Image (tube, rainbow, N blue to C red):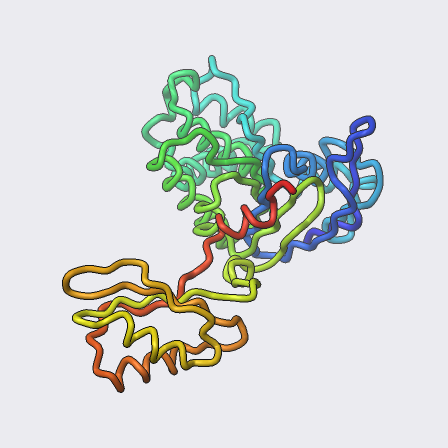
Length: 311
């Protein structure tokens, strides 16, 4: 659907995007993540033909950004971080204006506005002035604007920025609903939203791609060790440590909490194989009352911090 090939953009001597390449397939919801100044917005502006790159290319189907910018724009709905709305207009009048610009008239216009009002949850505010709306509702109106021409691809730049948790949840559900039929590329700083909404993320740092893949794959621990946490009741730490230290792949057994009725421990294990079955067999053999037993899962936030930290 979208092919990005060695895309580069300079602003003077500053390289904002540095030879990045990736593809977005039809039906994917892809999150573009990165710290401020990483090159996310610049990349999206190039993809939507808002600006041209210094070098490299972008193709949408058989069209490229140099020769067919209008054809690409006709197939993309774009919502920038600050939705470009006219605050003095009523929501209904604004959507009619957008529909007219997009060439929708008469019954087609009426039905499309009705459809988008339902999808984006706008029915209650259709006759309010845009300046009266909360940021969350303004984002919904912006989404309806971006969707007006029923584009195949939706590009969203920080769609939940500045929203409260309830508004974020509402926008997330709208994006998921749209994603059942559309290809979506969005940038965000809210990692939990990328984790909950996207089936793939691309992490950019200093203009370069540092990770690209399914969220679960990116979160997999690539370090030399992983942690297994265990909580046992009515058990002596020294005897537990002696038994579990005998497992070759266990590097260290650490007491993390000692209570009157039990202990909590962390096992640092060599990242070669999953030794949880062996740990469990020892617990079972010694008849230690087991309360908790789990492998510590790496979060997308932790992965993001590791990939984008300053050296």
